[in-house]
Image (cartoon, rainbow, N blue to C red; front, side, top):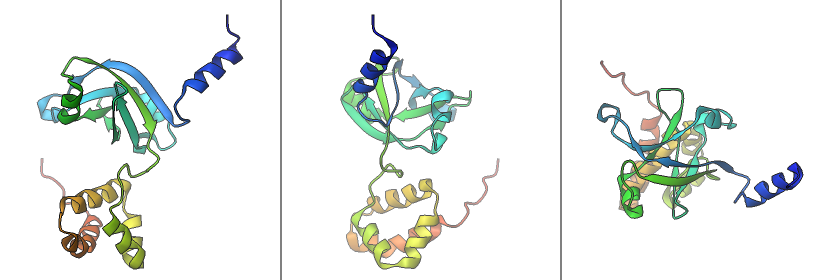
Length: 178
């Protein structure tokens, strides 16, 4: 038999990085259509709540050791959390609802979970007020700015629209009527 020290050394030597959060095999589930109909994997609350940034931690999910993508935690409604699996990623792996998938979650070294486009980086370096405004945004709002800019294919349009998009994100969203 192994001593506990040898076992711990073996386990830690198998970890790909110190940022490994969770590893499991699970069946692919789907939320009800009224809740979005997303395909997902469940992440136990004790895993998420044990992280320094809790549900605000960005992660890289690796499926079946073959496909990695950045993602974040969403509330499942029963105290646990879930990560969304896109139909496109499931298609790449040939997986469907109810299939079992092995997955590994590691902490994303990029707290935004997305690369800052070169155009935005340059604008933020040149305009201290714009940089300050961008940095005051919540990470989710910063990601939204980046995703909006990425959708604009023309670089000149990206440069022109970036300040407007950033300042729009600072305004509160109107309340939805129920």
